[in-house]
Length: 332
Image 1 (cartoon, helix red, strand yellow):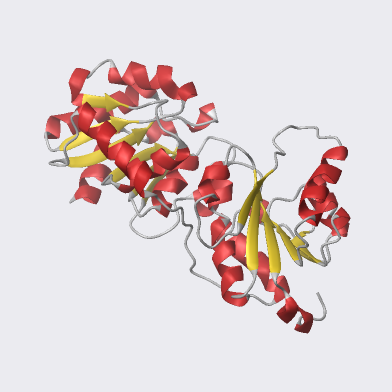
Image 2 (tube, rainbow, N blue to C red):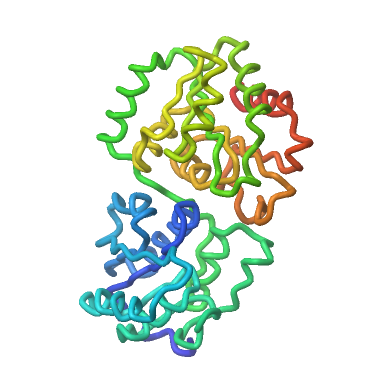
């Protein structure tokens, strides 16, 4: 964008990120960066129904608009549908963080004056854009998102993803933990064995050995979590340990997931969305990345922030003893 002087008149901004929960959460530093640059502006966020709870409770957002682009093939009429929603708000600027033809067409049809994004998938419809080099995975996804803002002269760094945890979610989770026998007298280790990509799941038999080793220490409460789709996997791990391990798979919303992770001392997980939620609420993460899995790259997708540990090798070469030792070192 050649002339940035007119940007001082910006009063109404919309951010669009409509993919998975991890990607949406790693986009949240853009909210803070824009608010710093345009402190008097109203900021709204467009995201999927699936990821809505990641941003819905933020006090710095005026509105969260839901729109799904998960389907592989979307009719162009969906762009007109979204454009109609956007036009009602009279946005001055749109920042599109996941390149998508429907999103680019929608912000164009809505007549939004400044259209910021990555020059891909009908990038011609944008008027402030940069090359999309995220596939090179030379920096973290958070940094790629913030780097995009340089096209409108915003040079912010070191902004961390954030997801608020409300008291009602904490109240529910504390009650749930109390019912299962987690009193807070021991360190709480939460384990998530699942991932939407089967290649990113640490083998269940190895994870059982990890749990077995941690149970023997006697000073940790272990809680297994997962989505409803993960319940069979979580049940199979829980089955070997009786009351020594607590299984909450399928019982938590995204907000409640954030609440339980916030009160935990450590989160052991594969490369998945909840990993980023844990980091965003300030909990240390031990992340297991499979070097053999497509798209598994900790340079771009590791838990963002300090104090986290990433084991990045072929899952064949990550031993349960290595995971147990890393856990002990983090909890010291």
